[in-house]
Amino acid sequence: ETGVTQSPTHLIKTRGQQVTLRCSSQSGHNTVSWYQQALGQGPQFIFQYYREEENGRGNFPPRFSGLQFPNYSSELNVNALELDDSALYLCASSSKASGRNQETQYFGPGTRLLVL
Amino acid sequence: DQQVKQNSPSLSVQEGRISILNCDYTNSMFDYFLWYKKYPAEGPTFLISISSIKDKNEDGRFTVFLNKSAKHLSLHIVPSQPGDSAVYFCAASAIRGGNNDMRFGAGTRLTVKP
Image 1 (cartoon, one colour):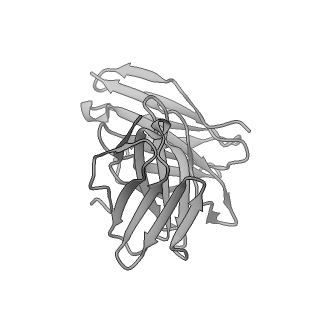
Image 2 (cartoon, rainbow over the protein chains, first blue to last red):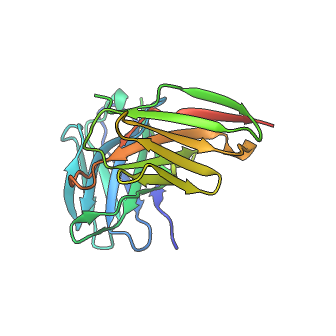
Image 3 (cartoon, one colour):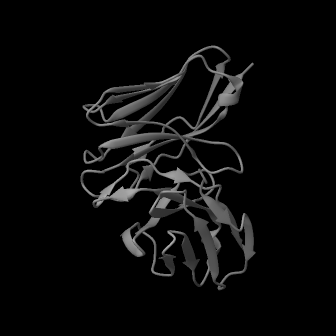
């Protein structure tokens, strides 16, 4: 069974730039959720993708956007980067059937983004 | 608004003793609760979960207890081992409500001393 993978592992950007983070879901999973984890805090939900559409969103501005592809992999895009966007970005995959969530999400190792 | 709270940022226990990690929540719509363990430079690893229809779930050395009336859950690890040293996150979601987001606490750093 292939676990959740994310790329890149680390990234340094400057304020105002744009960034794309990638995630491959665990084998058999069709749903991807993205989280932001700032230092000393728990992960915060950004959004979830199911069947290539956004399926729930947390309290993040529109400059945070995403995509899900037919193979269930996903991208997180952040435009106009701000210093406070520096964080660990986590992707989690799960399985949804008949519109009902599978309860458990499995996380990738994360991408650490530093905005200077 | 912090709907899931872990009030103890750190906990230190001796190897072989019991570790008890606590978590409180405020949203009565939460119906599924999870514990994740996180090592440095890794993503959170799923540990154990419990549905709101139960008050206890056990998996080897790990037991999660849920007290719905108090909106409180706890994770017991017994016996604790040095390899259990990590940051533990409590998470909650409202599955039946169709809510897709999981809310996390800020984490508790557990140190198990040999």
